[in-house]
Image (cartoon, rainbow, N blue to C red; front, side, top):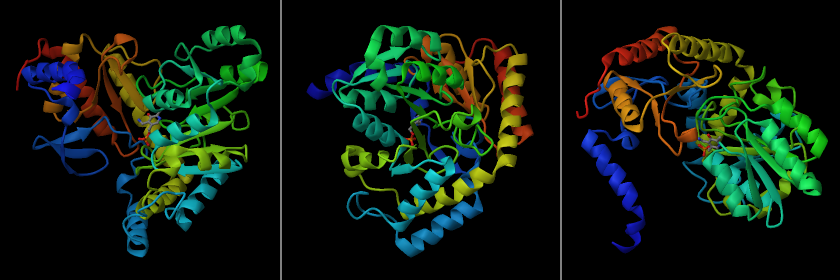
Length: 399
Ligand code: PMP
């Protein structure tokens, strides 16, 4: 065994799942039918656990842009942004992202994950200090670790806890980096941005907001929590992804500090990986235009989010703290949650299974997410499935 010894607990966990007849982390989408439907296990399934918030994955304008770019520029760049992988489209997208936020500078990365790795680990280093929300995404944690900076976690969405820690740090807070998210991916709750911005004024730290789940979702123009809270001029860095509301793949960091541009020269996850393909860049640029103009898309998204949150709330489920497109449903034990997840899939509804440690505070969740492309009838199907789940009692252990 040797190297594989350390994976023994994973092997045990997988064997336990096999015993239950469940393989939740290897779901195969056999055919993708639309932004909201797929064939899974031979069955037409309603997708209630994607990040397709604006439903743009099948938008004909985005598909057309991707096809045109592929014909004109080929399937890939075959190189790093730093070498042969910066085409005019990459540069244009950076200008468009900067203009979208009204900021001085933007960098496009190959994914949101590596945007966080690159930005955080380049902006901070040994001797620096980072304060991050305890529920931060893995890419934020990894970026912090890579930086070699001192890392302090504050309690999730708890500005008072952040302040308690800041008070102890004295002069060090001035150059500290505080990292939060717009909407948190597991519980769907917004960060208390106005309170944190008030602390920034008092303590003078730098502030980074990861808007992965809030880009296109919050704010009149879709610029995220920072826009919704009226704080565009108070935040130092916004990180985001193209893989959710924009329906493709890639990531970015924007800032009103023109010096952000220097980050690209020192960020290993920018320099040493291939740049996004022409198709990706072209469809992101098209999707960004739709996102900016897309108040009707956002209206539909929010109507769906509220319908699901209210419907599940009426059924008596304990949910995440506020209605957003991410609706977390607290379940019982890990095993009950696993069985419930499988039962939902067998009914033709795909939701995300979230087990500890991915779920906060040792809880187990069925995480639902909705998009603008869902119809009200589809939202009713999700609610109906949860209603039936409540009445099923003991769930079958094996398929
Ligand atoms: N940040 C957050 C908060 C996320 O939820 C995610 C993706 N789940 C990422 C970053 C990484 O984005 P990407 O999929 O583009 O790598």
